[in-house]
Length: 159
Image (cartoon, rainbow, N blue to C red; front, side, top):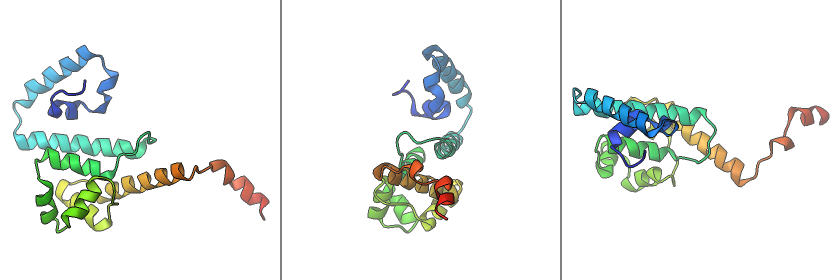
């Protein structure tokens, strides 16, 4: 059910494709009824937590399509309605470098991960692990890495 309300889609999460449309409509009505009691800050925090959970799931599951770590950061900036140039200034980071991270052309470093982690309360290690996992998957795909070629069994015979 794409193209709906972004807030509700974030709360329902990526598992919504497993539900039928009537269930999704009912869930959205329930969320809407309950969400009217929450402040905008609470709603943004719920979305941040949802994104954090999606990041952990991305890290723990096999990757079908690589999602650069910058895409997760971009989602956070959208949730909090922060302009990229203002964010770059806040964290003392070159705007062009931030743009490259957001587009997946530049890897995240420990300093940037620490700053992002501090602001959004998402463990810097999670940012680094996602980036490292993406790089490993890219390497294995680009080099047609064969696990069969490298094994403990072959090492035993190499003695």
